Length: 341
Image (cartoon, rainbow, N blue to C red):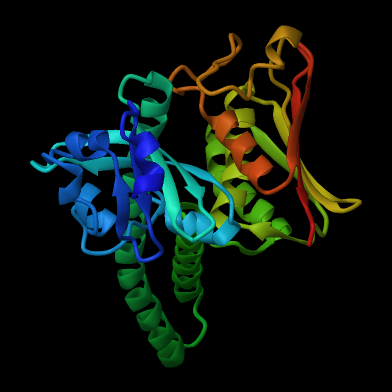
């Protein structure tokens, strides 16, 4: 298309895609990087077949379709994908997509393998996605025998009545099923927004982490009022709470306490997580939400410094904010506020 010829000499890949995923324009760089001899070989083809070797449009957390994302918001988006060359070699790219007046989408694409931060985040998201799929599979596999056990327990109840031994088995099975249900809510990574019951999310996360806290010799004290509902992803809200709780437990000494409070403040639902740990130096407070930043007082040496950065990103995406109050030697208090419906 003549009006896009200005992009012919661009160093980045440039492609224009219509609403039906057909490539209307591609510069030579795009065709060359994907292993084609000319841009004419890709024009008119469906983008997902050319760059991903798929039979249908991209979807999911690892490969969110820019066209679908723009369709939701009407705004420009940035996504990271793996593209595949003509010989099936793969390379990670960042796609900056912009909506055009005729409904098509202009994409400017650049490789990110040399950008260590973006490439690491992309690799991490791929690994987390794989772990989530594994957890989903394992949870469903465990659910099946649990349901069978529960059925036989009910049969024993009908035959022998409410014996203490039978009740104990029933309680244990119900506890396992409850934990699996909560874990499934954590790993289901849907970006479809729905009404999220904040109080239930907080209570479930506290329950899930009780054993972890006890193992560390830490007591969780909670004060959870009605919190209302927020619009967001159930798994995202639980990720926020879980991350803050795990951080608080990890910095706490044996015998100390972690305090969890939740409720409503004006037009916001709030969640507070407070610890009795070493606290954060004042000069570090402005850095703790930066990707890969690891505080000097941290006890857990295995992390990569992304937890609070991800929390901050999720909270801001939901229209909320996260704040920390801390002093060295006096612990830290993280406060998340999410807008109520």
